[in-house]
Image (tube, rainbow, N blue to C red; front, side, top):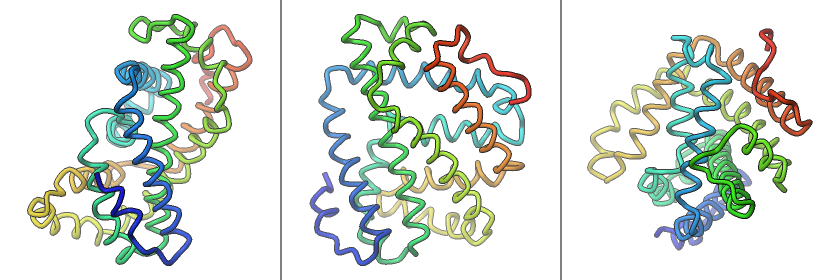
Length: 249
């Protein structure tokens, strides 16, 4: 809907140009995905993987200091369904973002957009592989998933996905430690509703609240990254129990 606005916006820094290109790529992908015959399959795969992530990181997910942050990651950052208005609103406010936000914040926003784009591209690839090989996402087993995973032609994107989780997570943690941001989010709730940006504002406020409640974001990220890299290594090597990790990870 707002592609023309993205294209027409003048940008004057590398950070703004990167965000602009990623938003254009994400906009075009969303249009492609919405019309894809396997759209519903991507939702099933996303749900399956979200449950797998909860199981792999159950100790962190149950920890009161990390639960809210991980829930935000799984339901907001990794949320292929129900975020159309939020994503449209990001496109819509892009001209104001590049006018008012510093480059470091634009870089963080670009990382979030890239992470969301890569994640959904990978889900669509898995859906297509499942369809091609007669595997039903509605009855997916661990063995099915690992077999399909090994057929992926986007392994470098999977490594990039993990890297982005670490990078963006640490950047977000730095920002939420600034109490001014919380005050601004509270003060801007009514103007956001008046401008029909309540979905975007709610997303930002949930993210701020989730990260403010976390005990040690660096520890969380280190464990997430180490475990997910080990899971990927196990799958690619054909380990019989790829999701069962040593207790010290």
